[in-house]
Length: 341
Image 1 (tube, rainbow, N blue to C red):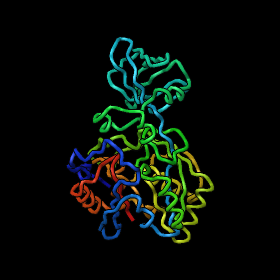
Image 2 (tube, one colour):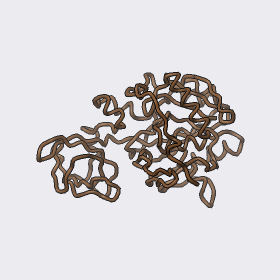
Image 3 (cartoon, rainbow, N blue to C red):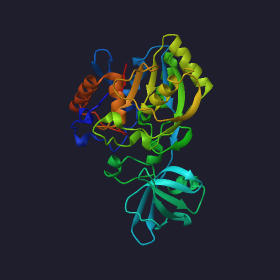
Image 4 (cartoon, rainbow, N blue to C red):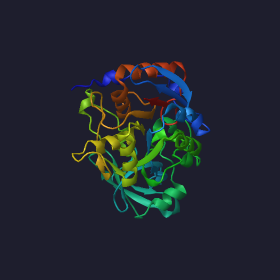
C-alpha cells in the first residue's frame, strides 16, 4: 500500500506552537472527537473523567525523561551542544549535534570530557566520555531535551526538568517526553479512579524512533527505529479484564499505543512482556486492542500524525486539525490535547 507523504502535509499557524506548558497541567484544552462521526466538542483536560465510563481503562507510559542535553565547549573553541540519544556501551553514547569533527575533544562542567569517535550509520555522532556513569552529571548539569521548535523559541531553564515530565514518571530512559501524558495531574488521576476508570501503566523509553522525520515520498517505506518497552503482569491483567468486560482501553499517547498493539499482535496474544518494538502504525492497519486515544496535535508528515490518522481516519483528523487551528488550540509537545473515542 502506498501512502503519499504529501497527504499528511498541511499549513498551520506557527504562532500556535506552544513554547510554554499550560499551568496548571490540567487546564490545557481538550478536543473530544467522536471516532464514528468525526464530530467534536471543546472541553478542558480536567473534564476527562466525565468523558469516560466506569469500566474503561486508561493506560499511561511511566517512562522518565533523562536530562540528556549537555552544553559544553570544543577544545578548539566554540559551543558544543549535544543531545545524547543512546548509550552504546559504558561511557560511549550516540549523540545528535552539529559541527563536530572526528577526533575532536569536548569539555563539560565538573571535569567531564569526551572525544568524538565518528558518525554511525544512523547519522549520529559516537562520543566517548571519560566517565562510564553520566546520570549524576545529567542530574547536576543536564538540560531537558526539549524539541527543537521549543528550544529555538526560548532559552532552556531548570523548571523544564519538572515540566517536561509526567507526574507519574518512574523509569528513567527516554530522550523525549510521552507528551500526551503531560496534562495529567494527581487530581485527574484520582477523579478517574473515583469514576470507576481503571488505570494501568506501560513503560516505553522514547528514542529517536518516535520523532525521526519521514523522508520518503511514500510514507509506507519509512522504518521505525526500535524502542524498548515493558508491561508487567499486574497491569496486563488490569487491561485484559477491562477489555473482556466491555470497557474501552484508552491509550495515552502514541508510545503507549505502539506498546499495546505490539503486545496484542504476538502469536500468543496480549499479555505481559518486554522487548524492542519498531511497530509503525499507518492508515489501513487495524487496531487489535485500543478503543480510545489521548494525543496531542502533531507535526505534519510525522509518524505520530499517521498513527492518529490510522485510528480516526485521515479526513476526520485533518478536519479536526482545521477546527483546532481556527479555535486557536496550542500545538505540539507543550500544546493542547485531543481525545478520540
